[in-house]
Image (tube, rainbow, N blue to C red):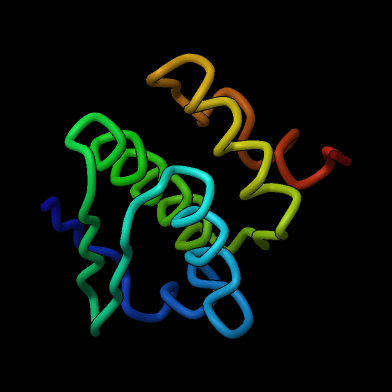
Length: 102
């Protein structure tokens, strides 16, 4: 189990409408994600936990900077992390991720 801290004001955008972003990540990485206050808990295979925690931390930074986060952004970022195992999304955010169409 991994826990990460995010900006509480950013959590609604990070989670998505009706937690749609978190649900997508749960299905994509086969993990369980719970969000309470500023804390997000990721449970599952340790390798996948680490990928999801890294992804959520990076997306949290993106949202905290005032950038929007769409379902396409989450999908693209998840695929990138899954394919590379680890990736710095800073090279894509905010200029490219929000403009990508999947």
